[in-house]
Amino acid sequence: MDDFTPHREHLVRVAYRMLGSLAEAEDAVQEAWLRWQRADRSDIVDPRAWLTRVTGRICLDVLRSARVTREAYVGPWLPEPLVERLPSGPDPAEVAALDDSVRIALLTLLERLTPEQRVAFVLHDVFGIPFSGIASILDLKVDTARQLASRARRLLHDSPPPPLKPLPQQQATIDAFFAACQGGDLAELTALLAPDVEFVSDGGGVVRAALRPIVGPDKVARFLVGIFRNRGHWITPEPVLANGQYGFLLRFRPDAAGDPAFEQWADGRAVMGVVVPDLSPDGRISRFSFVVNPEKLRHLEPVDG
Image 1 (cartoon, rainbow, N blue to C red):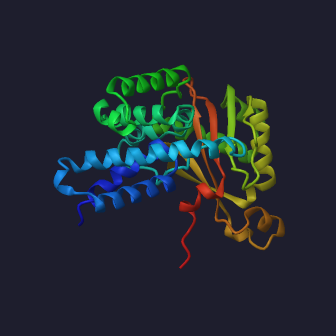
Image 2 (image 1 turned 45 degrees about the vertical axis):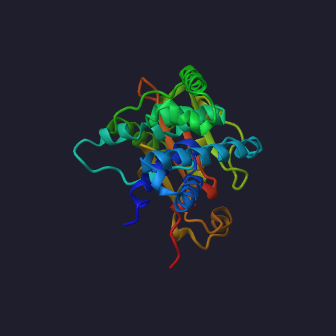
Image 3 (image 1 turned 120 degrees about the vertical axis):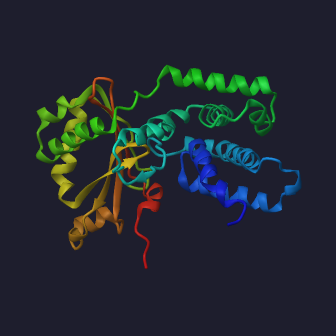
């Protein structure tokens, strides 16, 4: 094993929380590896701390250059989803709590921060990096780095995502919701939705998706029932752990191939999207994050050969 490999997973975790994209995070870590190869190791006392700072600088540059791209993004922007199998241990709720810092809702809120605020907040509040190290990344004084994290904290405090419910409670509510969708029961479906529920979809202008959030239980319920009524027979929902909470990976059914309408819609893809619901404090669904942009789902597509 080389001396970089033990740190790779940690660095990807750091970069993903700063960038909201697994592909960009892996690119940042690859660049950190290249700089590690060129570095004079005799002066590096703590390799993990050094690599974290280097990765932070790379992510800061990416965030700064990405601002123009994000401003021109078609429709709502959502992070690239991290999809895992559901835990099968004795207490799966603990698994969800461990991944709270990668929640779709939190990463979406981080988009409101400046690149400097985001780097300071993620490195200090999520990973416990001292402000002295953060100041060196940002090329600022320690007090200024501390102020950036404090401002980020205040901005996030104004509209924090609801606390995560235990995974079994998420599963019970969301399974009931999908059953109501498939059955077309509007009354039952609406009862599971919070009064201020919103449905946010990210197609990135690549595939068809709502360009603005759909708001309100009646509109969201009718929209989702319409999808399942018209296209549900082409989709297989697979329960997964998505960014630390209960969600669904929606796959296209292979046996639908040959139907011209299906072929046009699926366009050769195996994965339609990932849907991640959030529950409000009273246990109803308050938000759906629906990623359908194929560029953010490539890591979920099967590899040929």
